[in-house]
Amino acid sequence: MIERLPDEFFIIEEVIVFIDAGFLSKLSKHFGKGRYLKFDIIKFAKKLASNQNLACKHVFYYTAPPFQSYKPTSEENKRKESYDKFIKSINKNKEITIREGRCQKIKNTYHQKGVDTLVTMDLMSIPPLHKNIKKAILIACDSDFVPIISHLKELNLRTILHTYYDKNRKSNFSTSNELIKTVYKYILLKEKDFKNIPVK
Image (cartoon, rainbow, N blue to C red; front, side):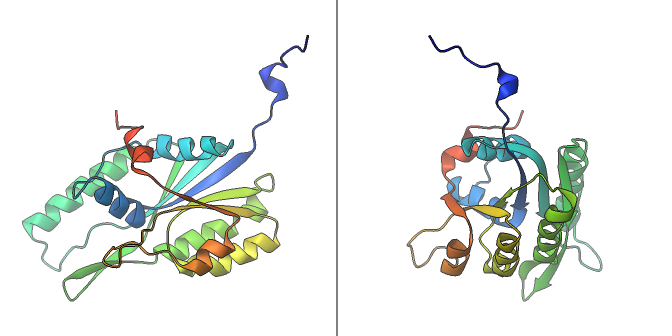
């Protein structure tokens, strides 16, 4: 008869999770058929890590405050108030770090600026600051991350990409083949990944 080893004999490898909030928000709206799905961000990150037999050590969440005009409209103020409330709430948890870029308005369309740079900086900090970490989970779809992922590969740090794309030509989702080829592994996010961890 083979005895089961105590839990302390099983060491689960740790991973750091990096989330592009703009991409994740767009995807939740897609799965919600025009309405944003409400889900627990930290539990979401931990579940994705657990699915890979990894333990989430920390979460980095990259976002940007909503655009504010020189003289903010009532709608802009409402969005900013809601955003500030969300950030204040999530900042109470030491398991997550919020990194903020800025929101730029160009011809009535909004674009996040500086977010990719922040992601790259934090990815680069893993080898010197977290020598025991050998894997990172990246939730994104941007090919701008190819150079840093390639560099981390040379430092023996493997990147697991969680992304989404489809074959619909009119879709808002497209993932670079170069990005897919660069990462250690890629996994397509599904609607159930959001719905299984509702906000309290």
